[in-house]
Structure formats: C-alpha cells, structure tokens
Length: 259
Ligand code: NAD
Image (cartoon, rainbow, N blue to C red):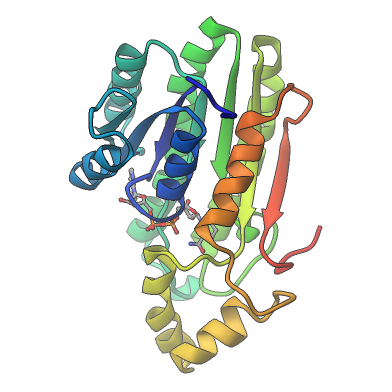
C-alpha cells in the first residue's frame, strides 16, 4: 500500500479520470474525499469505494465558488483529521472558434479550471502548512504544452496551471509541500465523448475523422490514453518518497506531445 492512511481530496472525482484516481488511491490505502459539483454522483462513488463511509466521503463543491471550496475542504479535514494530497482535476470543455466564442463561456471555463485550482490549492495549503507536508497534483493536458484550434480558453487555462504549479512548488517547499502537473492526451471520458460530435460539426468532418485525424493523429500508435494510465501517473506523484520531484509536468499521451 503506497498511500496507507494518507488523506486525499480529488476534485471532479464523480466521473472519468478523477474517479479512477480515487479508486486507485483507495486501493493503495488512502482515505478519499470525492469532491464534485454532482453531489449525488460523488456520494455514490464514495459508497462504491467504502460502503461504511469510514474511508471515503462525497463532498458537494463547485470548485469555482470560494465559500463552497473552503467549507468543503474544512469538512474533509474535520472528517479525516488531516489533508495530505490534493488532486485538482475538475474540468469542462467548450469548443468554438475564437471569433464566435461567447465571453460568458470563456469566463466559465477559466473559472472552473483556474479559479478552481487556485481556491482548492489555497484551502489545502493552509492545512498542509500546519502539517509541514503535502502533495498537490494538477490535471493539465497535452494542451498545457501545445495548442489546438477551437480550444482557446482550455489551452489558456491548461498552460496557466503549469505556472500555478511552479509557484506552489516554490512557495510550498519551505513547508514540505510539492506540486506537479499531469498532462494526459485524449482519454475516452464523457468530456471527450461530448466533443466528438461538436468538433465534427465545427470542422465539417465525420466523427470518425475527428477521432482519427484530430484526436489521435499525433499519437505514435493511434491509441487513446486510458483513465488507468493517468491514475498510475497520479499515484507515482502522490507516492514519490521525497520532495525532489516538484515543479514538474509529466505528459502521458502515447506520444501525442513530446518534450
Ligand atoms: P469528466 O467530464 O468525465 O469528469 C469531470 C468531472 O468534473 C465531473 O464529475 C463533473 O461533475 C466535475 N465538475 C465539472 N465542473 C465542476 C465544478 N465546477 N466543480 C466541481 N466539479 C466539477 O471529465 P474528465 O475527462 O475525467 O476530465 C477530468 C480532467 O482531466 C479535466 O480537468 C480535463 O480537462 C482533464 N483532461 C481530460 C482529458 C480527456 O481526454 N478526457 C485529457 C487531458 C486532460
């Protein structure tokens, strides 16, 4: 067990990548808070992990809402008595060309990805600094490193997370806190499934062409990255035995992007 009795909050963990990270962390002995906008799904995921409610709880939280984040993180600390790992993972996707991008949608996407990362980080660091240790993991993307058409706010936000993570690595070092970013390629989750017809419409191509020529074209083997792949990378960062590994980003993308 590589995370025995560590306390982890995973945002956006009622679905997709976040859910798999929660499953893997629980398997490795962690106590888990499933923090999600969708409280019903968060509670259901927590029950799947631990029907007794002793080692997994659901926490309703809009990560872009300051009061909800602060009270949600407080609830986790009250329940488990500590906070060792934050996985800032909650996210959405909205695709459109810049010239047509609605300002309200731009702001919504940036708020969930960037305000959400900041607010959950701030609330977690206040506890981690008291404990003099902690690990923060941001869910970036290949779009933290590279751009694609139709994804202006997403690419902007995902690049921004790398900047935030580096500051957390520098400020957190004196308090035993490390910070890193995982940058996955395309993973078949609801977030990606929703984009396939949307991109087909915007680009005037078939859904199959979106998968082959847009999503997987740059990979070395034409394969989607899986939730399991990303969860393994999260476990690697979370269980790394020293604070040497900080301020870094790791691309897990079948070669979609190479450093
Ligand atoms: P998903 O849609 O399966 O899950 C996202 C979860 O976030 C959902 O449970 C949703 O309820 C929750 N959420 C949305 N807005 C929220 C908010 N304001 N507050 C709290 N929770 C909220 O998506 P996913 O594919 O698992 O994506 C998870 C993360 O991984 C995102 O940050 C995404 O950008 C990133 N990512 C995904 C891919 C991919 O191909 N799927 C690739 C790279 C990075």
